[in-house]
Image 1 (cartoon, one colour):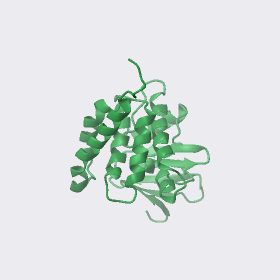
Image 2 (cartoon, one colour):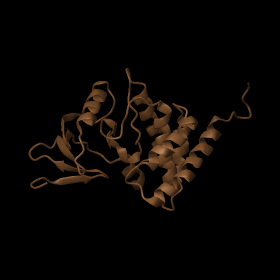
Image 3 (tube, one colour):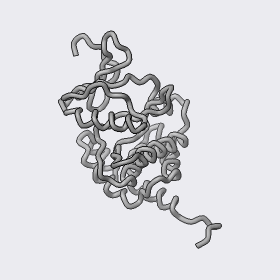
Image 4 (tube, one colour):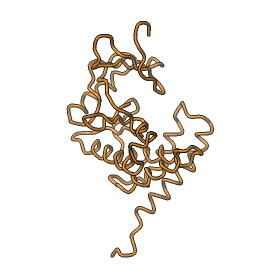
Length: 225
């Protein structure tokens, strides 16, 4: 946008600083999508005490929201200032807190380390574009687990840490994951921005989540019926 400084770029939107007011940023959807529903949802969640950015205006492709200061959880992992195990536990806790809200809380359905900003007031969850109501909490946990599993099976340097975070997320519990892995895999496969290579890797990622989730549900040798 002419005259505005770009301060961030996501998969579907660009973020601009607002001149003369450092407290707010403008996020503009590149595909022209409507942010009204997302803005209303974030406002409701903020009123209920869930950690989301404050929203000032949501209209058409533009969402004016609180400017957050701090690294994403993904950046902190890359810098070595946050460990993978605690990162997985944090994601599980954020999901559990979301689904414990009164009324009909939504599912985020895309909660991964890149969508958590570590601010002075604590972790804040961003990017609610894919959030939907009417899903069981286990699907939300399964989606996050699948996203971590994809990285865990990748050839990149983050694979071992992603597996550790995945194990921690599943160990934290909060909602049953096993019944929802297939649905999570199918939803993920429908993502328009996935490459064919990423789609081909989904079956393996779903199998890894199922394997680790099954191990978490097995009784230990010292347990009793």
